[in-house]
Every structure is written in C-alpha cells, then in structure tokens.
Image (cartoon, rainbow, N blue to C red; front, side, top):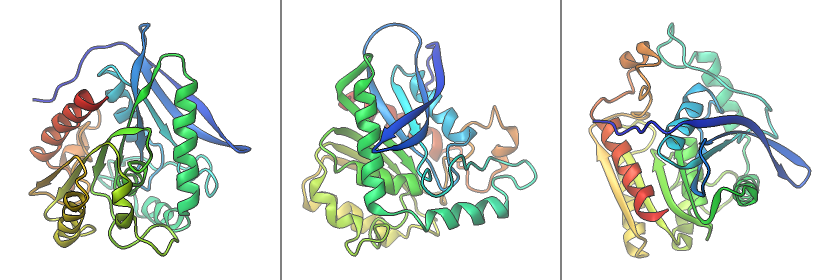
Length: 265
C-alpha cells in the first residue's frame, strides 16, 4: 500500500540565484506553519515536467519542503517533455532533445547548481537548516549521488543513476570515485533488467559504499530502467501500461524512500 498523507500544500515556480544565473525551480511545501526538512528533487533528462512536479508535491504531502531545480538552465531554459498517451511515455523527439541537452551538462555546473539549491533552501524561514535530503531519477539519480558528497545532504535516494561508475559529465574521474566524500545515508534503487545500468555497475556501487563504510542500502528489483515511471497512474491512466513501470517495485521503493527521509531528516 502506498503511503500518502493528506497534508495541504502550496506550490510555486521560483528562481534560485546562482552567481548571476537564475535557475527555474518548482517549490512544493506544507501550507501550515512550522519548520520542515527539505528535499531537492533531481529530474530525468526530460526537465521539470508534470511527473517531477507530482513527485515534489507527493514529498511535500509527507511534511517536507520539496524543490525541483532545472538542470538545463544554461543549455535549454524552460525545456520540459511530458508523458504522452500516444507514445505511452515520451515521444522520440522529446527523448532526442533530452539526450542532446544531457550530453552538454558539465560536472562543475552540477556542483554549482546543487550548492545554489542548498543555499536557497537555507534562506527559507520554514526550512530546518540541518535537515536536507535529495532524490533523483536516471540522470537525476546520478546527480543525487553527486549531491550526496555535500556535507549538508543528510539523506539521498538515488534511482537507477546511469553512468555513476563510468563518467562524471566531462571530468576524467568517474563519480563513483567520490564515494568516500558521502557523509549522510544513501539508498540506491536499481532494476535487474535495466539496459542502461548493468548488474555489474550496481554491484560495483554497492561494493564501493561498503568499502568506504557509507551508511547505505541497495535495493534491486526484477524490473527495467525507469520502473518508477507511472507511479501516478491514477492521474495518467495510460501510464499503467508504460513498459518501464513496475507495480511491485515502485510502491515498495517509495516506502523505503519514506523510511530514509523519516530516519535521517
């Protein structure tokens, strides 16, 4: 059973300042007064689309402040590709564009944008300063792994992060080599039938987390890449037929995400 609370939330489009650059972001937060832990939501290659906004809202309904920053602000401001009933997912053109922009992203810019998002959250009076986590999917799963190396990040949920063991967005050193810098707790979620993240890669990630004594859990499901896609099938009924969606894996993974945030934020 998927745990969803009924907390009333407010949402807004905001700008995250970053050394003269304004990063578009989607903010979702509880409507009632108080101070709350915060979660940064990193998207797939398709931008801050309806799926990512829904995830931010779902997190906010659990009593967190959620913010999803645009990772293509320098390359393609305003880009987002949405689910299509015709394609039962994303159109070929949307995939082509998303991949094109993804290939232009630079590691130093990712670091800068993560730091800017953290700094922005700390300016909000209702954010608990020492309780910030991240979650990301595919491209965002890799970005979340990078974000986990920041001292401010206490909890990381990385879903099927592609390229963690082999690349780092233009840098010679792959992201996995930065695993010793992770200070908080990280949960990593993978599908054993993922064609973009091999079983060998997931084993390498788990071994590196163990070797560096990082507080972690690795979850593997009999599922393909993007198995969380379609989690909002009630809102987008056609997504239930999405070839990536796994009705057993997605709800189970979500419960572990809630456990991660509850215990560490």
